[in-house]
Length: 151
Image (tube, rainbow, N blue to C red; front, side):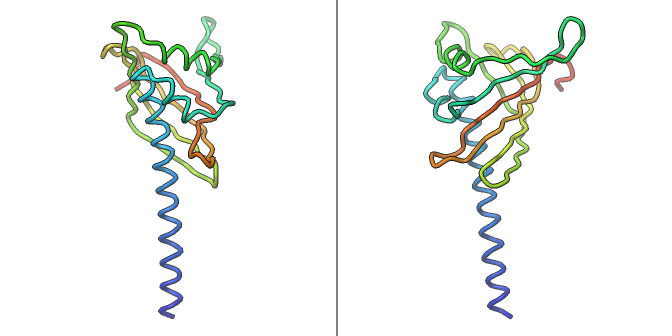
């Protein structure tokens, strides 16, 4: 009976450790993405982006309809990787809610966005990721953006 309990505890510890490791890997990839944006370092961003990554924003049209705006990830990387004198982009995540199933993960990350320490908007990012031999890679980012209800 003691051996059975010991085996059960070892398996449970292994499962918990793997789940924590996956969550930390996802969090690290997302943090690296935003570190790259803050530091205008496209190399940091490219290292955690899957080659087929999509970038979309949920918005409202002038007519009040919900629309999806899509941006090419290459254009985004070029834009945030280009140094502009006197411009600092800073997206500050307020929390992480991460879910993992095997080699797939998602992260829900509320944020506040600043340009030169001036608040611009807030919202939520939803990251989809896959686990590769090189680590967790972001395959899709969808976000919302608003100026009110940000407290």
